[in-house]
Image 1 (cartoon, helix red, strand yellow):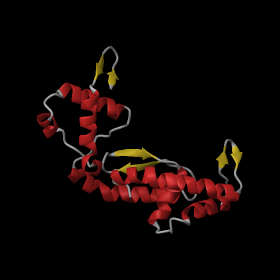
Image 2: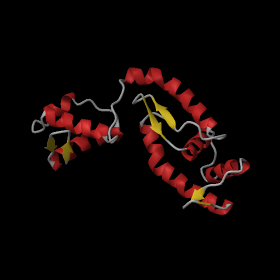
Image 3: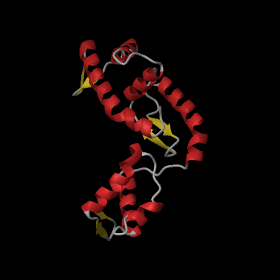
Length: 181
């Protein structure tokens, strides 16, 4: 991996990159402290580790995390805010971020994803969620677009089923890791 700055670049050996990524992926990608990492990986210097982490944070591949006690204090506030945002998505597209108590940052999501999350929280049957989103949009005179063209109701539900499957497999696990549930 090559990290390039304003006037310098640094090549990081692929084996080191793998060791760092494996360390971060351990324990279901839970937050990590690098204090012991350098001791157990003496071939990787602190400078290389810092450059790697900075590059990953800059590309939004990694995110710095709050200490556990801060996460616990912020969680209930973030949950209430996120509930308000998700509920509001049923009426209009207004806010496209959810608050993560883990990172202390907003996480970008679209209106449909907010609606999916809201309906999951309301314990809707997963098979019914795409149809319910379509029903809500239709009741507001809105239709989904594909390639710039409006979809009819049946194609809209099919599109939402595909989007919900992707949401469940990709977005929802990320939101859960970020303590957004």
